[in-house]
Length: 256
Image (spheres, rainbow, N blue to C red):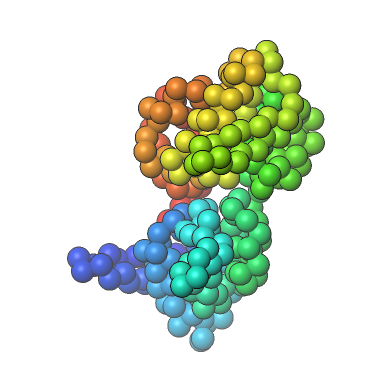
């Protein structure tokens, strides 16, 4: 496996140096443009060496793809941000690009030679730690993947959906949760207020506890509001490291 060094200059420039030749496999959070420029510098240095030394295969693993929710042009005159990001990734010409739990299939469609890394093993750990809770899909978009997980775990699944009426979220829950512990399963949480309201609705229908699993835990506004209705959070460290008794975080190996 190839070894490299990264140097960050005071003016923000990033430079890479190949220390030991071989196959290239970069593992990176990928949640910032700086991360992507680190990858580009390493790949450029590797390509330069590869023209004469035939180093091998180049692979990239992105644990938390930046801009993945901007998967369309939302309004006239606005940029299609995910497309810009994916075009930049494609310009590096990796033989394989792995993406952990992408927000939508559009990311995989836009990135050449890409493949999804499943989040199943992390949900499975949370499921068994809690003790066989009812799985809850938070919206129609998450239902298919959560249904597949429920089948693998032989778990009960309760779908929910959210609509806004005069700006206020109205949540419908399509199943019985009375006297049961629940685990909401989704891909990411920015602030997490939607999950707070869903947990509140589940408890009003008799759920004893409500836990949350998200692969990409941003939680940009902290946990105080979430603690009002959500009993515990499970996530990976794909976006950042979290030190809190309120959060169980599954560690990913080899992040640059």
